Length: 310
Image 1 (cartoon, rainbow, N blue to C red):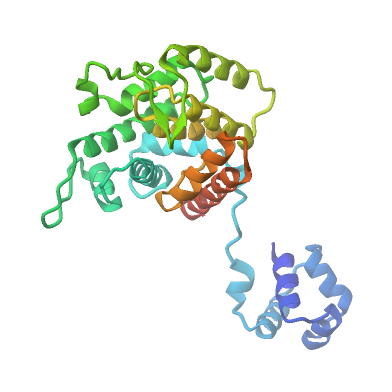
Image 2 (image 1 turned 90 degrees about the vertical axis):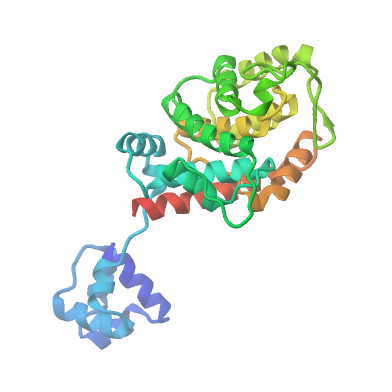
């Protein structure tokens, strides 16, 4: 709003309304009305104000206002852009940033440029003598499909069937899918651990997952903190033989969208903070480490939304 800009520039100059009024030749009451938005400055006053504030008239009246992301339904935007099949938008870059970071956290050696190349051309970019794992390539391509499936089902209630489908899409065709003891799209058969912490035993996974979903689906209100709590409990169960982190993070993204909360993508550069936060939270320690990491990731995604929707 123009009035807000006039007030902001005046305060940045450490000037009173009386001082501004004297310089541009109007009353202090007029400046007050400008700032409240009850009176628009005429062209002469705009010129004098712009000279006083050392900006152009265009900067004063056309300065880009910040988008109120809280009023944007990110799910609707992503679904619409997915159907448009256009490049260079929020959906396009969400796919690349999400796939690169969530896979890299789990050890993928593909670069962000290679991830982008796979998404945009359905081919792999090699540089020099670079060797890429077939599984890394497959899981990157699978993650693109996973995001699309998640968007198509984002408004549905979370269920065991959906979570298993997430895992199936992610791991389909990989070397793990050819192992007799590794069940793609179903719960683990062998015990596993995460970060040295014990997880649910295979015989208890189904019971623990049902209890987790009963708790979550009974909540009357879901905020980002409940979604983080679900993520922590899910990772502690660790229901699949592999792929738990990526499935857990896609669930968190989905639930943010379902509840009209700006989602978050944990970046690979924040992996150490993310793992530390999970461990502290799961051990009954400080919850703030993980919450702050997720809120910081949410801030990063807000910037992405603002950039593509400005």
